[in-house]
Image (tube, rainbow, N blue to C red; front, side, top):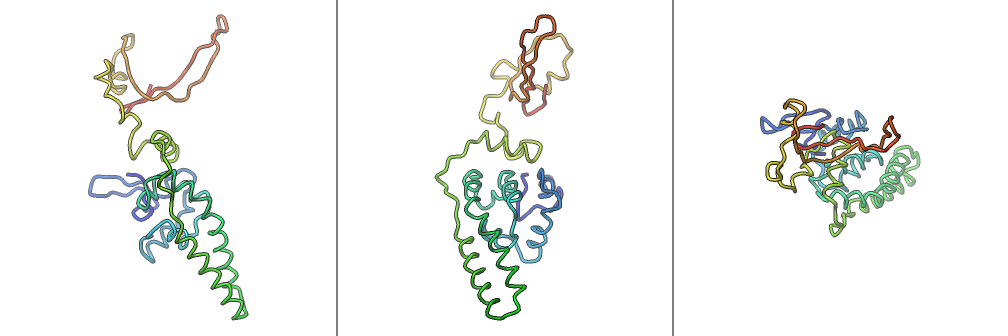
Length: 219
């Protein structure tokens, strides 16, 4: 299961006795930087919205983007592109809120502290009111590729889910092909990645090298 801002721990956990839930710290590039997010949730309850999450956890730019593109905020809106494009509107206000809270805590004068409190409340109200534009169209393949980049694999789905199974195309699964003897002529289907152009030593002619992957393996 993809990471979930309200269900994931730092590491992997088991749900429903058989499903494995990604931990927030296992998202590429985040690590223990998400500890505060988990502690805030455990102490004060589940996050109710993206705005509520922003107000309470004060996530930085890197965390916001990684949590969005890995699927950790799908519980609030599963259109990840819409949420991602909304982030530009809330990042400055999260930074502003941090600053206002810091100044409020440091203020010695009661009037100044109250002024910063009012400013912080106004900023919080603005953050809580922001909503993603659901009219934005998301590319399913790009969504899954970014998910794989952050989680190391396709988790919420697979790009090949939208295509016929290999047997209907006169091909075999890559997992089965890998167990066959070498020298046999076979056909496989899959997603091409890591494409590179190289030069043949004999005459310098170009040729391509790539990996092809399906749900069962990679060649």
